[in-house]
Length: 114
Image (cartoon, rainbow, N blue to C red; front, top):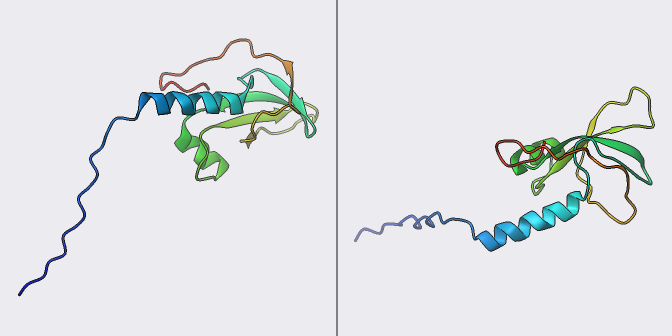
């Protein structure tokens, strides 16, 4: 008698549920807050100008070195002359304050704001 072990069948790819996609988008928008390129915000750590907003999860994960990142910001400390831009993934909270609004959100062709 021959025994064979069949590979489990692959789960067919399905389109993402539009309601789930919209819910995730709203959560990400809340986490980012008003921090679009050109905005300046302050918190207990200092004051920062937003240089770029990365909404591509793959790129955000690479930049932040986090497996679950959905977005990332590249910011520059405006209180330190000569400061280099760096990446953050901290959520907008009530301790953050908008100092200057972004002029306009720029949307790239892939649907992310950069």
